[in-house]
Structures are given as C-alpha cells and as structure tokens.
Amino acid sequence: MFIQQQIKYKLLLSFSLVITILAGCSQNDSQREFEREAFNRASGITQTNDRGEIIDGNRDPDDWRIAPFFQGLVIVDPAFPNPVQSNGRIFINIQVTGIDAVSGLRAFVLYDTNNIRFLHEEPSSPLMTGLYTISLNPLSIAQFQENPQGIYRIILEDFSRNIITYGDIQIK
Image (cartoon, rainbow, N blue to C red; front, side, top):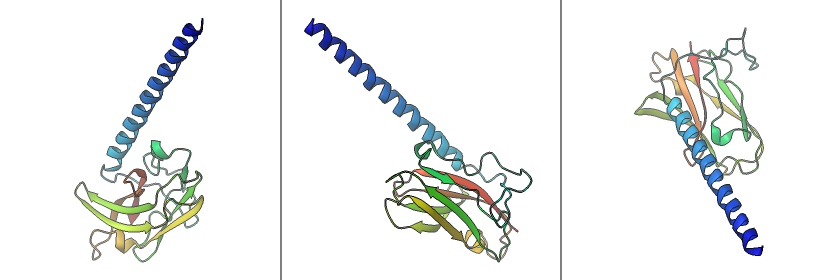
C-alpha cells in the first residue's frame, strides 16, 4: 500500500512538472512572438488628447499591449498626446503593480530592424510598485530633426531586454 502511494505521488509530481514546463514553453513562445511583432514597422496610432483620453475610439489594437511576461504586473496607458507637435512633449504612463516585477526600464525608438535610438532609462532595479511617467521630446524621437514628421515605433523593455510593450506615435 505504501509503495502504491509513493508511485502515485511520484506520478503526480512528474505530471505536475511536465505541465509546468509546457506552460513555461508556451509563455516563452508567446513572449518571443510578441517581441517579433514589436520589431514590425510602425503602422498606425492610438489617437489621444492632452489628458491621455482616446479620441473618438481611434485606438490601434496593436499599440501598447502588454507582453505575456508582464501581464498582470504592469499597466501601460497609450502615449499622449498622440499625434504630438514637434515642439511639444509626449508622455507614457506605466503603472507597476507587481512587487519586483520589472528589472529597470528602457525606452527606445525603432526606425528599422537595425536602427534604433535610446530615449530614456529608469535606473532603479527592480522598479517599485507605483506610477512611472516617461516624458519624451519629439525631436529626440524623430530620425531627422530637420524633418521630424512621421510615425515612430516606441519600445519599452526591462534591463534583461524583455520587451514590456510597444506603440506608435506620430509627430506632426
């Protein structure tokens, strides 16, 4: 009887381990797919006003989604105002809800696959729970300051280079 219980326990433990590994692989695959999508070209924007409210339901479904690794741990509001004038500022609010969930924060702009520019770093690691606001100068985002107009992809990642979210902004 005791041996049967040990066998059942070992089988249950093995089954649990296999399920955990498979779930982890699925999440890793989901994260990798999300990160591949982040490196696509900028394609549209979520239009927001100066208070961060979405204008007339103009929401790009691809913008500011949360990566699988960070779901339930961070909330990111769409960048605002969007579009932004070249002489203005654009803001991104990140609410960290998980304890020790985010190991630092970096923002960069993607021009194409091999061309990025660093924009901002939140040096504390891990980030404490609470609200973080990234304030960006549109001329720092623009690939060419002489002609800054365009749509640009902003990517946020942690210090381990895991992408947290991404979204597109337009400079007018």
